[in-house]
Length: 207
Image (cartoon, rainbow, N blue to C red):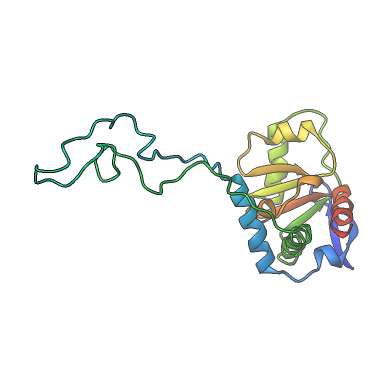
C-alpha cells in the first residue's frame, strides 16, 4: 500500500496514512475518464434552446397571391421557412441531453483521477481543519500557506463554518466525500482530503 503524509493546517507533518492501491494506486484509464466527464457535462446542459417551425409562427393564414398567372413562384404562406420572418427548419427544440454510464465505469473513472492526483503529487491530506468561527481571512491564510490556487476540499461531514469561510474565495470548492466526482477532481489543481474522508472514499469505491 502507498503511504501518504498527513498535515495539520500549519503545514506540519503530523502522521502518515496508508492508502489502498486499488483506489489511489491504479492505472489511469483515460477512456473511462472521458466517458464519465462527457456524461457529467451532458447532464449539466439545460436543453432549453427552442425555435419555431412554420406552424408555430404567428400569422401567414392568407395566401400571398394566387396560384397561377403572376409569373412568380407558388406561395401558400408568408411563414414559409424560405421567407423572412418565417419558421425554422430542423431548429433546436427543448430536449434532455443526459445519458448514463454503468456504475462500474463511474467508479473506475473516479479511481483513475484519484490515482492521477496522487502520482502528480497534487493531493494533500489534512488531519482536520479546526475553525471555531466563520473567518474568510483565517481560511485564506491556510490556503496561501499551502500555496493552493484552485483547490477542491473533500470533507467527511457537513461543516457550515468551513463552507461559509470559503465561499467568498475564488477557485475554492467544498464537497462531501459522498459527492466526490470525476469532473470536480479533474477541474481542480489540488485535491485536499480530510483524513476521515479517505476511508469513506475507499469504502464507497471498493464496495
